[in-house]
Length: 249
Image 1 (tube, helix red, strand yellow):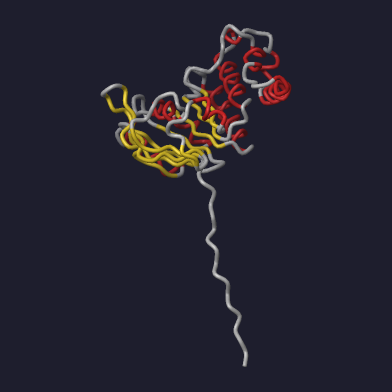
Image 2 (spheres, rainbow, N blue to C red; image 1 turned 180 degrees about the vertical axis):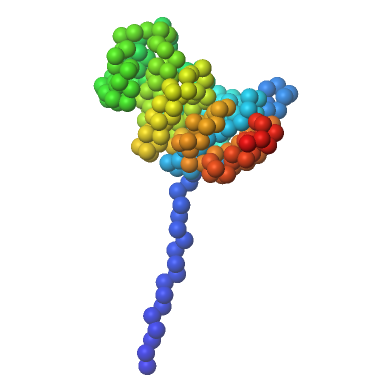
């Protein structure tokens, strides 16, 4: 008499939690509701472009994610941990860093002093400076210069270098292109792509979509405080044309 082997039950594949997950997020300025039930997922290691016209709610959403503005309802998860009521400092220590709209620098300090202030402890500063100057050689040339006297592109480089000093798992970028010439914007987005290749997940908010879509793995479109389209970059372009140009290509 022969016995047949018992095939072991197949174990389900466990996927890692997304780096960021928003579920039915609402937020308001006083009585004016700005976010109206936002659902958004940013996979680990991905670049997500969040697009839409002025007033769509993009910057407000980043403020809520980064703890600068309270949500009125909904849930936010960072790497699988509920962080809806976390403070900005707690979120930074958990791996989230934001480059705000209009740069995040101290204009009356030198480039090097700005980078020093990115360090929580003295021994870290040498690595911070080495990494910053390797990624942005222009900053090394300007290291003794007041940050407020830098060009707009150089200030944005410094903002990125300061944000990366904390070695974030998730980087939020708000209107990286604001006030900059197209060639400088393209160079900055080349840097964004390089940062993503090093394993940093990125959520980038942009009004001008072309550069962001060029480096994005996924994209979502906001309108009226809601996500109205999501998918791969090529899949959202039709919705963008509809919102910006009334359907014109």
